[in-house]
Image 1 (cartoon, rainbow, N blue to C red):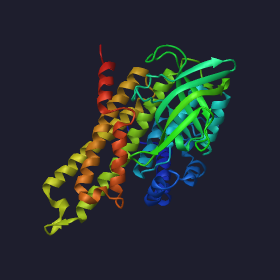
Image 2: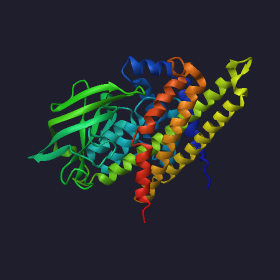
Image 3: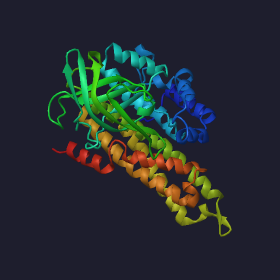
Image 4: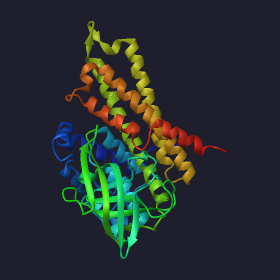
Length: 382
């Protein structure tokens, strides 16, 4: 199979890589992540106005480029290589995918704002008792006249403290874990002044991103807050989650390639017993093992990306196989990079420690390797 990029895709990759190398400073991003707003709005606007990557996979009708899974992979890998903390996956992949499939005037307006760099979305789907079982929904939505009324809790809603819009899963019928009966709602949002009926508890995650736990109490929404058909959101949610996994798989490849390159370079420079530690055979073997894990991760990311447009079962099987592989590789490469750097590996001064934190988060994001192995086994039953 030919895994080569087209000329247009190569141009996209080179443009994003060049921009990030010259304009995205790791020290500055760490500063805003730990003591500032948690992101760089001027960089986000440049993503939209100068690079156009916020619309890379959005329809042309809303100001996007109409790109597909490969364009998503190219952008996500470049962002991972530069350790970008801005909410690309939450907004463009999850938000863009859900809104695009839902359709309607409100959804299209938000999509146009995303492509222009004017909107950030957060997907509120995980609940305190659900883990990463996205169809385990106890948050409820009921009709009262011309309004919807939401009650429930969502946890670890990444990018919620930055968001202009929330996309929330809520049950409008059925039992707790039924796939039928799940609906999506779009909420205009201001984290500094949340709507009446929304309680927000914000925090910084281990990988220096912003997240929040949300409590909805008698939250009243207009009728047009419903996205798509009532009770029929599960297929769109399932696809969005799989697209998110594919995106972070590509991001992880970018992260691991950078970590491996930095580790090899460090081994060439660090002296021990009068020679570079990279000359010691046991450490050479370790770095070869890291290289093999990275290459397997690359293949896994390709598997995920190239099956996003397949039928539901084939897509889900490929995504779970990829996530299990990526989770294992992220742990191995990240931990060995830190160990080979010694105590310096976890200091604020070296990039490797920050990359390790993000790889650790990706290991568990959207479900653990064990969960996806179980999902893969279930999908392959005859």
